[in-house]
Image 1 (cartoon, rainbow, N blue to C red):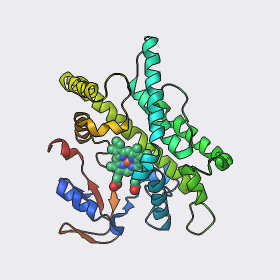
Image 2 (cartoon, rainbow, N blue to C red):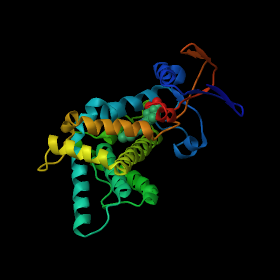
Image 3 (cartoon, rainbow, N blue to C red):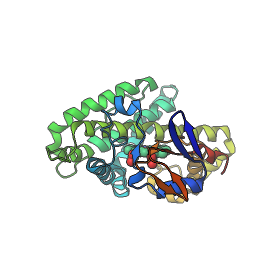
Length: 295
Ligand code: HEM
């Protein structure tokens, strides 16, 4: 679908086949993001990973974050951090129960996600409190950035197992294409903002959907009792045997896409996608909302 909003041409991939064609065509032509005020003012004048224009630093930031945080091997390597944080969360829930205090899921998830991310980025649990008010997001970010500043002084302690920030700093030498301080700060901010709310909101949605349909909740609990029992915690390695739970996760992603209108990309020169002509400077969006109507 081609739209002209004011003077800006936009093309929206509203069907799965069209979205797939865009993903396939995501080459140099569609690597840049559309400019916007947020990226200029909040992302260090477009020096971060998400909004920087394609070039050597764009490639370096993606390479390092994939190798050390987002890619499959890194994901496996950091499994122990996720396990530890889930342990802290369960302990906090238990304490709430013992003191007859309510468990505020959204606050607890914000704290857990923040700590999982800071564990991988800088080998540190940033948030010591048991829960966070959602309006404390700004102070979470400030805290993260302050800890990042202090991180350099302890890098020698992690020679054998450097974290993402160690690796980024090691790549920030003066070379022409090395990372700048703005690149590093922007990237940390990207990972923190992209990873925390997306993950916690989808968990909240899944829980809300299950509470709304108790028969589904019961079936998921029965499956866990059968596969795991009541004597131990769920481990990530159990997931392959929890088919019903995995189906619930997929369905929650379909019904509640957290980045509905996603981060727009812009064509740097005219190109063809799936037989359609896309002019230069056209914003390309993949429309996730439609998945709700087309299961
Ligand atoms: C439920 C969880 C998540 C959802 C639904 C989600 C969704 C998305 C979407 C739709 C994009 C845009 C992709 C594109 O433009 O092609 C994106 C980008 C990104 N996400 Fe996530 N994400 C999630 C979790 C995370 C986590 C946990 C992290 C990091 C710890 C993360 C880091 C990023 C980064 C860095 C980008 C920018 C990638 C780039 O520009 O190349 N995301 N995410």
